[in-house]
Amino acid sequence: MFNYNFEIKKEFKGANIPRTIRFTNRLFEKLNQTAEENDISFNLLVLQCCQFALDHYKNESSKENLEK
Image (cartoon, rainbow, N blue to C red; front, side):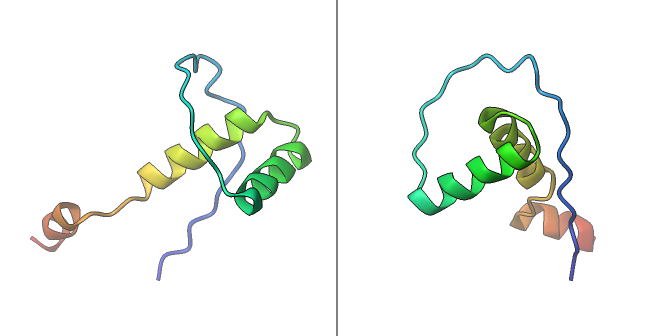
């Protein structure tokens, strides 16, 4: 099994496309707490989480390409 380590980085400063998303209360609180503990904005943390998820995303076509 893969062990992915998420590391907080202070990048994505040029992010300026606004979107509206909805969080559950529990997820919002966990994200907000993590952002505060790492002295970064909530937005920066969400951007990094999204980038991490996309970097480690495996779909069926990528699995097939790895098996060839």
